Length: 633
Image 1 (cartoon, rainbow, N blue to C red):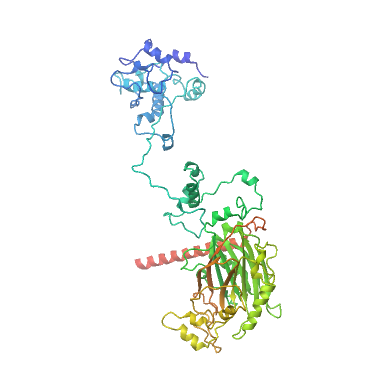
Image 2: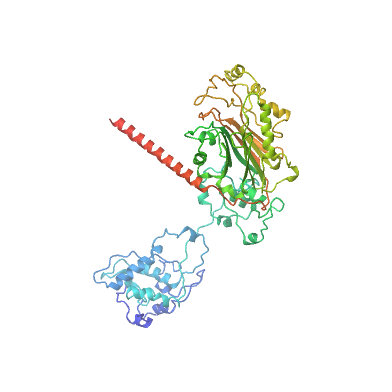
């Protein structure tokens, strides 16, 4: 049961008095008890009412003093005195340590708290008390029994914990002020800000901000959006902060309410595929596309590693989209797709895969870009007389990314050195019979032609085994290839059937091809770099090609065009091309793909990648242990 103040005063703790300490009847001590609720002025212009406890000339009456160092309690001290000693020491640790300034957060806050009478009483006790009195009493005996320090503390701990809930409500809550750090002033004038900041929007994974020396570590430290509130309100600075450290733009409820789903290239604000979102992910409005074509010759065995095909060592950056076309593919198509996913890893997902017999076409995109892709459509065409035989023909895949439509076609034309006319017929049949797009809106219907599928898309990539040969005898071709210095590819391409037909306009109208600086990709002996050594002695030729076409000039820029000479499981060498394609904002009225991808393939590819890494570590561990044993023996 809680005791009243009168009961506590009637049983004060017994302690010997020091000389000079006021007695219970002393008027100064009575003034202290009567003025416990009074406050000291912030500027300390008036003398506190309990200043009689100070010794003149030795203590500043306006500055709290640290408490005395508590010594061991004598044997004759009561348990109450010991409890009071411990509580006084614990509650005044911050005053006893002159170096403590509080937390860094509190030191920067505006704290105008005024020290209360209790703080001055503690300071008086520190001044007037000594380590030990002559009779062995503790230093607390010099304090007046009516001091607020001892009121309500002569009982059990449970009673003390309950008492402040009712007593402190009537007393003003005054806490000691904390030391504030002085503001930091620059030594010299600050440099002028430039208007050209690091980047205008978020950077994609294949674009590195070279102004960031420590890379993605700042992602974790500065990804909190509250940092924007503490920065300057300059729009350029905020935009630079968002782009450099990937701070997502805030979404206001009003923006969500007013979204019309028809915005895009015209209005450009708030649309998922509009200009604002496009500039956020692609500041330069360029999409990186990696295209690979390979005639696998129907081999069952796949290469152990496809890194050289998709992630060559001479490439500085990975691309946003990977498109792989295969002719005469392996019998197990699913195994081929899993191997591609295993090679590209968790950064990419398979957006779509289509097949026409042994023609495979697979599209992978970065996993954070699938939300900007439309539904994917595909169509197939066979060029054989009997449609049941699906070894020659084409498969096409079309979709829209933001406001730009893409068409990817992989095909296999008629083989034979002299069958140029048959290959032209294959081309004409494909562009007329490939039924795309189906449900996707045409981004520019005024420039479309019903008889040519390649005119109905903004950007078109056509790649595959076209089977066009070099119209030159083999000894002359080998003489150019085996030169000691770099072979002159232009002298070979002068006899290229495809280049000749494109110049005459009979095939691939409106298409372009990058400059060729690699050796012919057909026909090799399997497992080596020697060209055909069989009795047929086929002439080396550029049968595997990548061509492109766009509605707007200069929309497609070639970054790389070469062959992959390390994959030798087929008589063809793969050909790869890296392109930068211009993007345009679009409207939200296209059928979105809603982030769909092959989840089962993704999980299987990641599982295999982890298993391969564990096996590699196990092999390295065994090798290290065996080498250690050999060195010891």
